[in-house]
Length: 379
Image 1 (cartoon, rainbow, N blue to C red):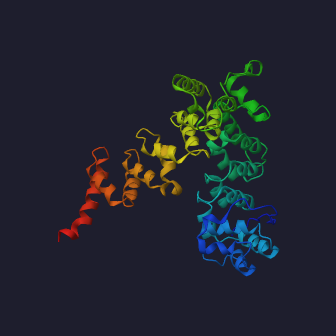
Image 2: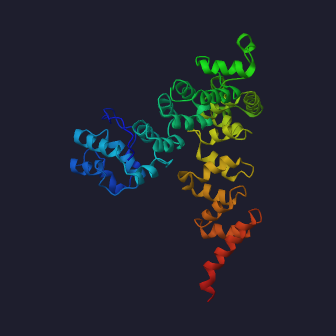
Image 3: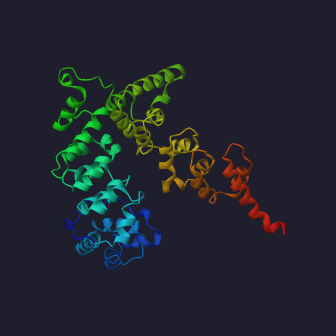
């Protein structure tokens, strides 16, 4: 544990926002409110054999326990995690958002752990915004370098601009980037200064036309993923064309917000955007469906950054169809494809060994795997 002081852990009083589904069934008794207190206390003291990610999640759940002693035990353990637990769990993007958000409030002044949590794509933007107002200079720089978060959630810039530990150069750089990307926060003085610095004082008199906003698109086309599929033929195609034309006119900041909150049709346009921040925001959308992920895993012209998000997501890799699609996709790095090849069914490996459309290295590896499998039979 670092010598940096940690905030006092306060007991939780509301209902826990996560369930025990992430735990192996035999371990759920340790967070079951109906289980004997000694069982829950074992987990609160970190005495149950759990993976680092499961342990931090269990401690979070026990902060909502009805027994004060359990809450206090869990809080003490959570505030004094061994490095091997914290360093592993805080990097894991499969840990649920509410859990990561809580640990960010707990370890926000511990620079090393704060960095891990800020860089974890599953840590909620709201938690990062809350930290941004009073974090250290180092953490402020890490937050300021995360361009996707900055454009996705306005409050991060608002709070970062208030931080006395953030240098003027950092705030100016963040605001310049945000303004160039189309973000317009009139309530942030540094953002107003950046607009004048980049576009001249005339922007005060005649604001720049920045195109449609995400809110306007959502209001017109709806949040329902199937909204555009309800019309018929030419009418439906016309609406899709209209949507595409409007998205083209949007600035980067609004595209990212639409990618995060919009419907399936909007995502189908945004996933192809030339700006990688927009395409990554799309694949990371909380509304993304398994079918959309599968389509991108198969897509031979998908952005490299989009594919990287897919093949580093363990939850998606549990879906066999997505795994197979990645192996077949020549844009996926050879090392990743070969690792996944070893997890495929023998019938699919055989097909890959004969498939002229896959990368030659994958076809050769598949042939070697089949030959090795069949070698004993020949003897």
